[in-house]
Image 1 (cartoon, helix red, strand yellow):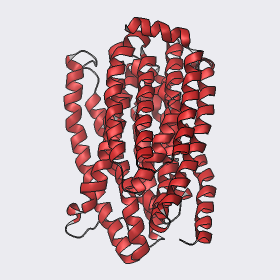
Image 2 (image 1 turned 45 degrees about the horizontal axis):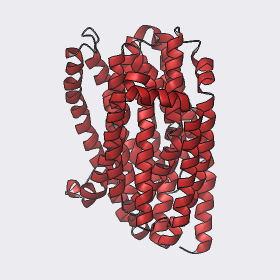
Image 3 (image 1 turned 90 degrees about the vertical axis):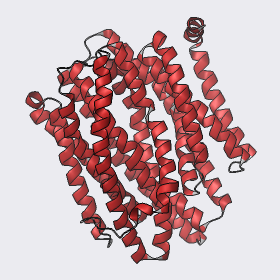
Image 4 (image 1 turned 60 degrees about the vertical axis):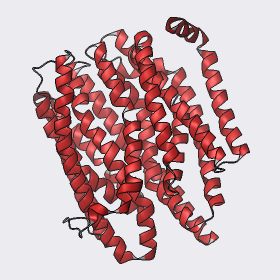
Amino acid sequence: MPEKLHKIVRKKAINSSFIVILFTSISFSGFFLRDYLMAKIYGFGRELDMFYLATMIPMFMVTVFCIPFGQSVVPMLKKIQTLDRNQFYQKVRNLAFLIFFICLFLCIASYILSDFIFVAFNYFGLIERNIDIKFMQITILPILLFSGLVILGNTVLSLCEHYVYPAFLQTIVPIFAIIFLLIFGKFMGVYAVILGMIFGQLINLVMVNNALKHEGVILMPLKAKKGIFNDQFLKNDYSHLVLIAIFSAMLIPINSFFCSTLGHGAVSIFNLGMKFSLFVMGIFSSLFTAILLPYLSKLSNYKSQNTLNKETFYMLLCGSLFFTFYSFLIFIYAQSISSLLFSYIAIENATILGLASVIKYSIIQLPFWVFNAIIFRHANAINRIGIILFSSIIALILNVILSLSLIKFMSVGGLALSITISSALSSVIILIYYGFKKYLNFFEILSIAALWFIFSATLIKMNVNPLLLLIEKLI
């Protein structure tokens, strides 16, 4: 890639980033507002807990199968797009058929899997039998069914350097969820929200499909050549990314299930408190997937490895500095934020304290999370994702061990802290590996490590007495 063209591509990516962040912020703010309004209307009780638990399995499937599908096809489609446009169009159509088939299978699997999970919950008395949880699960499945096509369509639009339009379209689902909640919520319950999400997802799919037609890409009607299920990328990139997504995405569901042992309302408190960190993660994950991954894939095809590594380090440094400052602010004022936002919908002071502890201990994972997220896109672009898989397995195991210990002494806050510690260890493992493989030089490794050390040491100093008390209890 000529240097002049490289600068043009970089400038377009940077300019688009601000607009993508804006629309993604609106989208995630919409989902947060949806949850806030649901808590205000239904309270932190059984019905809201059921909504989170019923949506957990289908949304888990989207996270671990559909989103990795969109990420795994980027390097492959970018190369094909450069070499042969006609082959690119056919490949996209084949992939559309494949992801729809996968989502159809996932819907069936979700329905069957939920039987085992909720029967177990009923057996241990964690969910009462008079809740029609199965019907709620069935109504959510259409969202899962069409998610794959929407994600693939957004990926193709990003490859065609239409970064902003997919970000704009993702605001549709939360908007319709809120509208349906306000209009039908009082007599339909949480089903109004589910219906609004389905309706918004269908509109999103139609608009994505129309946008692709202007690029000469036909997503629907579905059609594919023979042999689509023997595609080599399914056995390599996609299967690895699915495993990474499974181990990463299991953190929240596992801890939510642990929360259910604390009584009614605990699941809602944990999930709503986690929204503060998930809000930021969602925004930047969308940005990294929509813009950073195609950009790094393009660099890996045209530029030297050294240029790709340098660009990655600059992003790591900027991201770490920004999120270190942001995390400090939220950590310090978590109690005030919780009181300000939730005093109108939470009756008990213990609920506000629980929300504050989840916000406080989950937000400090962001400097480590952004490192992992950027490195993940770099590893995906150069097809070196084995270390990401290994670190995610270690993080999941550590999270389970810590959660079982910390929940006894810190309640929902302990579950949030366990995720943060697991994320930090995962980052350390990846940093050591990237230094060993020379993707980052000694100075770059030292810069990132020093920033993490200062951040961690400051947090420990600010909470030395509670930390000593916790260690004493654990011992």
